[in-house]
Image (cartoon, rainbow, N blue to C red; front, side, top):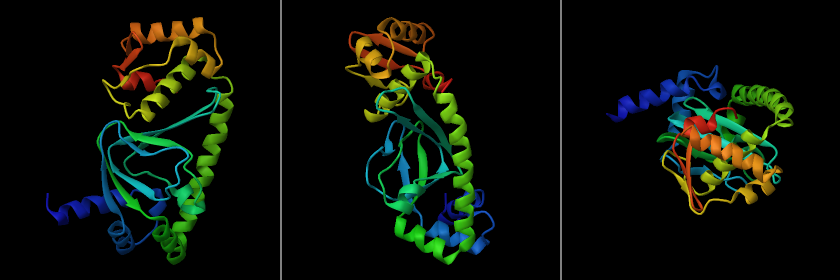
Length: 231
C-alpha cells in the first residue's frame, strides 16, 4: 500500500471519529499527521489501570477491550473499543493514572497523540473541545445506567470478569491464552464474594460449553467471544 493511499484511509477513518466531528478536511489531515502509528497484537496490553501514561489513542482498525474490576470483584466496567473510537483522553486531560486496562483482542492499528499535543489542539480548535465535552456527557449517562446493573451482577458475570481481568494482566486475553497457574476455586470465590460451590458450577458450565478448558492449576481460553457474552 502506498503512503498516499494509507494516509487517505486514515483520513477517512478520522472523519468518522466523534472527537473530530465538524472539523474541516485540512484540520483532520493535520490531526492525522500528529498521530504516531502504533500496532498492537492479540493479547497485548495498551494501557494498564493505575499506570501514569497520558497519551490519547485513536483506533484506526481492529478491536480492543477495556476492563476495570473493583477490589472486591463485585463491580466491573467493561467496554469494547473499535475502529473510529478513541480512548485515553481522561489521563491526557488531568494527568491522573489510567482508569482501565485496555488490551487488543485482535491485531489493532492505533494512532497515538501525546497529551501536550491534544491540549494544543483543544486550544486551537474550540469545536474539538466541544465535541469532547459532548462525548464525556454521553459516556457519563451510559456509565450511570451500567452502575445500576452492576449492583445486581450474578456470580457468572463476576467469574467471567475476573478471568478476563487476569488474562489481561498476563497478556493472555486471546484464543488459546492460558492462566498457568490459574486461581483456585476458593481464591476466585473469596475475591468475588461468592461461595466455592457457585464458582465451581460456573466454571463447569463454561468448560462444558467450550468457553474454557481447565486442568490441574491451568485454565485455557478456547472461545473468547463467548467469554465476553453477558458482560
